[in-house]
Length: 409
Image 1 (tube, rainbow, N blue to C red):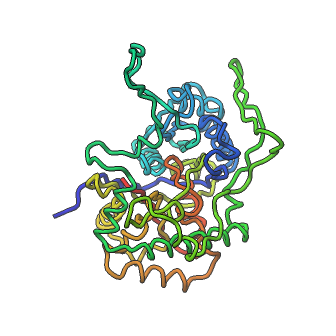
Image 2: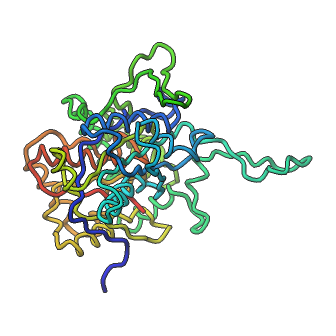
Image 3: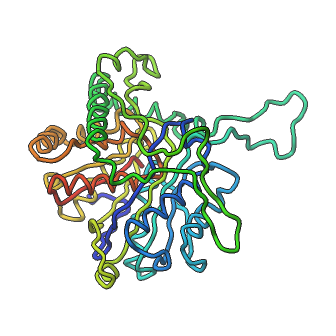
């Protein structure tokens, strides 16, 4: 039986080079900055990098999960306006949890293929630090002796009331289902961190990062917005989380759940960041003498049982391959925007021999260390744009042709 899910094949959709801010640890140097302003920063830089005037943009598609201030309703509109995009151009916000950043490209592709626009600006932004402490049941006030409902928005949002478990437990379910051991995930995490550090030292990420500085975003006729770094910090230009993490050190950490595999050391970091990219039709690129980085060939999304939500990439990849006629062996690069420590391993476990074959192919290919595994720098729901940009840079270095990115759904 044919797999069900979303599938889009695109004939003439192209990615131009995108940019991102550094991915900075939770409560770090970017923690006080609104996700709207991080998004404006990334959007302006992406337009500049692509050499495309804001006036050429016909659609702005943004992604953001949790509110980072009271202005979240206006986030897509303000990113659009303060990036210089004309007022009459609509801006929308999409949300697909960990897949939000990638969903932006799917929607941009749909709009371009439908003739809605010729050039779209996609922006993913998230401030994990600024997730609020919130209450939803006190509109009518506080009764004497009644429970106070303020809770940590970010922590509570990890819980799925349908399945009755949290995101961490879904990763543990996958570990049991596919025989993924604590040693497996610690080793993967250690390798990922080592590759990320090596990539940083080689300057591999420099081409995708726009430094964050104190600056003002002006908009004629309206109040200025901006970024103001705190203390003596003049510039933030590097990812802060990657660090050498030996397996022996990771092995000493206590798991979140007794007998489980997930720890604070082998799972992704919480970070604050934004990423942006311009997507156009090939007709537009050719007419304006632009050289895009890659064509967006297709996109797929498949729903899975909530209790094992992290398995999402496996059926999505299968649907994509089935409908495009590609094979696993055709894919030179995978980027998986996972949060749980078992998520990278379960995709290969569902296709016997796949993980081993792909790892061998990468070792045999030239190029810099494949450093942007999702675990080491971050887990950033809005910035799948950064993952796709990294995949493209790796393809260029590896002289490859096909890359895929699919987050859990």
